[in-house]
Amino acid sequence: MAEREEIVVRAERREGRGKNDARRLRARGFVPLTVYGGEGEAVSAAAPLAELAAILRSETGPNTIFTIDVDGIGASEVLFLDRQLDPVRGRLVHADLRRLVRGQKLEVTVPLHLIGEPLGIKEEGGVLEQVVREIDIRVSPRDIPEAINVDVSHLGVHDVLHVSDIPADEKIEILSDPETVLATIGIIREEEVAPAPATEEPAAEPEVIGKGKKEDEE
Image (cartoon, rainbow, N blue to C red; front, side, top):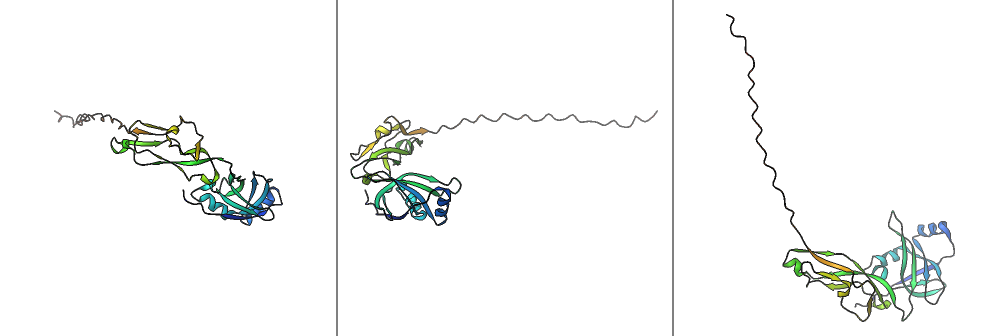
């Protein structure tokens, strides 16, 4: 596992409360947040939106461990516990951060990545159907993986991959139900196309002979 980059976000203690205070913070480019857990009390603070957004956009996303250094309080290692986004702009408007405690494992959700090209695709013309894209795990903060990678190259048509098929890792405890289906190899059935009904030639319209002049009068 690659060594994690040390990220420090400096924050200011938040004294005000209410929507007006939060609005003023956001106008300055800050996001109101609360730090919970560990051995300390809950702390209300505000941190730069740009720095928090960059963490959420990183490969480890909300599972990124970083240090929040609050003026007058001190520094704590944290990760995102919850976050609130603006429903229109999609911008972060509030965050809850969880302090990390040495030796304490966390329950987190990480992406599931399927690795390799299944035999059922290469040899039988099947198609890979991924049913689950995230896995719940319990793990020490420093051992949180960017993703759970599972090799599917051995799967043939109609084979099914379950949670129980994920290779064991002594550092990671899988919390998802072992019988949960992660992926399967289906087969594409060509739909039978009914032949188009033969179109009958339209019957020739009878020639209409117009009434001529009356025969020459006798």
